[in-house]
Image (cartoon, rainbow, N blue to C red):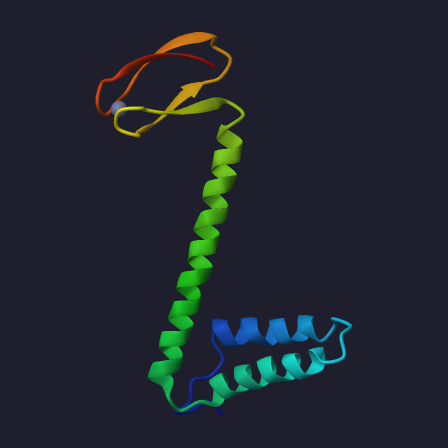
Amino acid sequence: MFIGRNGPDQLSFALTILAFILSFIPWNYMYIISFVVLAFALFRMFSRNVEKRRQENSAFMNLVNKIKMWYYRSKTKRQQSKFYKVFVCPQCAQKLRVPKGKGKVSIKCSKCGHKMIKYT
Ligand SMILES: [Zn+2]
């Protein structure tokens, strides 16, 4: 069925799901948008311009990965903020992580060696 055509990929799959979700939004013109999105997903699946569709899909996957990375990074930050406090070195802008609840501490920058006294 998909010989010589792009076939289903992650972007088409995501578009199909998006069209499905949009169809539930109670707004008079939403079915048109939903239909256009679904039509685009189908167009991509049956497209013979496989190279172009692959580029679109890889751009989409790049975006998805960036969002995933951002999510995991902010999750790690949130988890670490329970136990660590982050200071920024005034000389070189290096981020310095120190354990929380230790009171007055002397911090030495690992990059430039600048010393400072901070409360954690
Ligand atoms: Zn520094």
